[in-house]
Image (cartoon, rainbow, N blue to C red; front, side):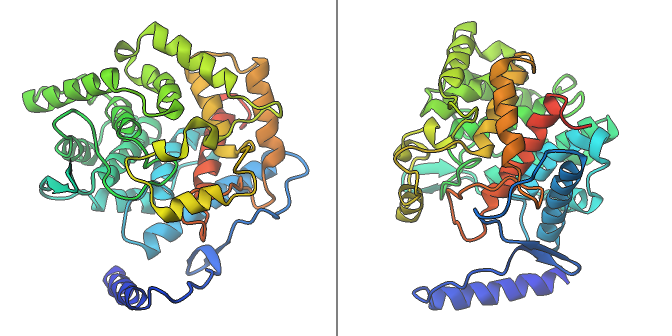
Length: 377
């Protein structure tokens, strides 16, 4: 069945390549498979009247449905649906129940049997599939940590495959289009790799392979010494400090905390677009992405958004800022009043707005932030 869908996908892709100038029809659903239909996110979807157990349940269903649809209808591990599902959903097991085994199986089945070869395009060397290898490894590591409590053989294999896609400078390089967030700077992708090796139960502690240990040290050196490309890289050092505290100085932690507090809006939220100049998100920015971002109604003065608000709360909690802190409480209040009746947190897409996958990412991050503050029971 999956092979048939793959052939159909290729035929459709060929058709669209031939008819590139034809207007693309608006999709009917954000996610769809037999028995599941998830409507497209829209800015005018009503907000919840109150954040409660019912709206939490709706958010969990949205995350589960989206991930199941993706593995049944698509062919890749990605950074916008199954990636965030597997990186965030396992930690919510105690409150929401076990994540979907079908998604886990899809990740396990995607582990390649042999390493890939480095490529070079436009003067940039990279390993194809590096970002999907990182997200697959992270998801499997988080599943092991929160669902079964021990390292799995498939997680070990995925982590080893991931490290073999590391570039000479210690980074993981994602060549191609920017997808804000999650495919931006090399620092961000390498940070996710660091999260993967530290989340996998006992993996780093018991690692004996000299080559892999050397690659881990190169990763640490890159993360320690990389020059921040933007403020997003700067505040992400707070997350890095929670995974590999030895590579972040106290000075950098203090500076990142001060910067994050400075970026908070008066309404209690944060904005992702405040975190970087437009052309500093990635080594190359397509005209399409630039047009999407500059055409947003609040382009000149970005409003608070759920992804950055949730991420800011996560970073603060990882930095041991108490949940009772007024700045976190104002962020939580913003999140609670911005949830939509479908359970998700809608957000203007910063990449390919037709499906608004950033809404899925934002919802996954919002649930993590709320859980870290004792708001999911």
